[in-house]
Image 1 (cartoon, rainbow over the protein chains, first blue to last red):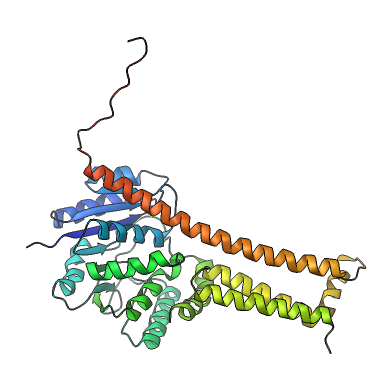
Image 2: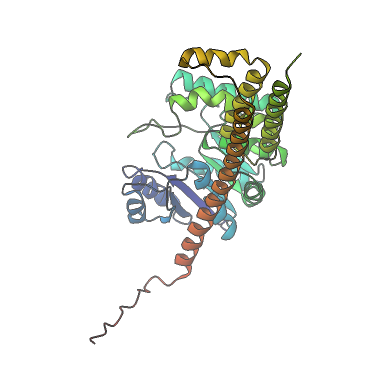
Amino acid sequence: MTPKVLIMIPAYNEEKTVGEVVKSTLALFPEFKVVVIDDGSEDATAENAREAGADVISLPFHCGGSVVVQTGYMVAANDGYDYTVKIDADGQHKPEEITKLLNPLINDEADMTAGSRYLTLNKNHNSAVRDGGIVFSSTLISSFRKMEITDITSGMRAWSRKAIQTLLQNYVENEFIEDSVFWVVETLLASKKKLRLKEVPIEVLPRKYGNSKSFSLDKMLLYPLRLIITLFVYY
Amino acid sequence: MWQRYALIGIIFSLILIILDFYLLRKRKISGKGFALWFIIGVVAGLLSAAPSIVSYIYVIFGTDATISAFMAAGFLFFLSFTFYLHYKVSELRSLLMKLTMEVSVAKYSEKQSAPSDLQPKKRKSKRE
């Protein structure tokens, strides 16, 4: 029996790329449900996603990545999806690599999977500062929770139904998590709840348009402080 | 030895910091909010422990006033009330986000279950 799979694509002002991402995903996986979660975009993101064939959930205002992903979890839990995959709307993730994320879940080797840019030699690297930050935070979390994580901020992920239900329950009970540390919190929660997390190698393409919304100077400077606070709360 | 008002200030700042840590640990306050109130607590504690620092402010502003009990109490009340408001705003923000999520998902589910060819009926005008 074919598993019921949801592919969620969070999007904020990505009118130039979202249509192409949806089309290429649906071309590869026509049996999967593709849902774009529009985070209060001011451009034609929602229209372009709909035209490309995706279902669209529109948040009434810009809420941030953490809320968008949790909205996706809610849809997955409410509609009873077996597996949920998240890819970015900026075209940096390759839809053909979705199977790499799904296979360990289907084979029951993991409850959640994350794509890692650092498991193989990747020619499309970020800035040295950003790479350094990711490696530092991944190593820190790995050593604290005795896990093997190389790319803690990766936005290409997949979850089983069990993982979605466990994480969603935890998020509902608590204060909303800041976007910059969302994946760190999720990794710590997964480890605490004994969810099996597996990384798979992926290639991340350079952005075609605009700059990354998850990386700015103030976020970079305050990130170590946020990381320490997060560890204190969730360790 | 410390003056009584300095002791009150230090106890106040300690309570503020402990409460800040407690709310963070209980995940009732964001990391950003915690950092802000931790700094405020530390500064309040330092000013209470060494009130002479405050005198530099008088030098900068060119005023010549001493701290009255009324002013100190007012300042502590102001800090406590702002902290409480920050906590409430944080709580309400969290609820607002949850509500936003639920409404958006409910609207989506409603659209999914509704027949696609269902169009809103045009209202008949009174003239007709």
